[in-house]
Image (spheres, rainbow, N blue to C red):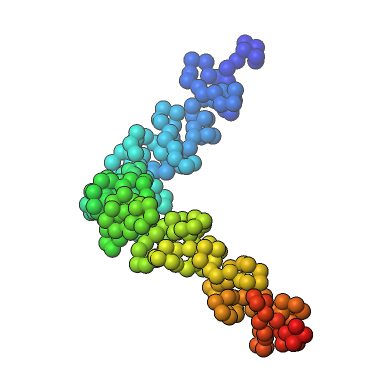
Length: 281
């Protein structure tokens, strides 16, 4: 028979006619040579995993089907969920018993693969992590810890949060207090221009808050010199004479404009004059 028509093992050259053989990379091998050359050794028994056996693998490690067992209880892991701890494969029950966390509420093991909640070193089954007030599972929603309990946002606001004096809604973060009443920062506004007063200097009139500008425009006396409001709220100094007021820098001689602050002066009708200009008159 011509060589081209022969069917021999690529390694030992024995004829494969009428025998079982295995193809690898388009090359045929007898079962013995294939196992010697390519078969993986079982992690459990160290024997080769032959052609007639299933080769079960996990992270580049291999087992006979009958050797693929839990490292603690020896139950088969074939087609079952398992977990790895170091080099050891464990069934979910053994892994949970030895390594899984316990639920803070029901004290039972939280099985691998099940949904759980964790907070500050404690763990819960998802269905055991409940709002302290409404007793509904919080799940992945936001929550607020209070004393030894945990509250969903809605229940916390109902039970503990202050209500804003303006909008009547709960204040969950920040806020300001004015006249022993709570306000959202964005709700504490000047009664005149509606500008936010949080973090700003302000004053009050008849218990209503005003920014300095609005208060000055509405209630402050006007300077005789420049007609602008005079307010001491921002630290401005002013001069008062015969029910008239001036900014310090505006209290000047009507004729020569010299400052009259701390100096003698004369009056001529509604005008204020320095003594020199007054004598000239």
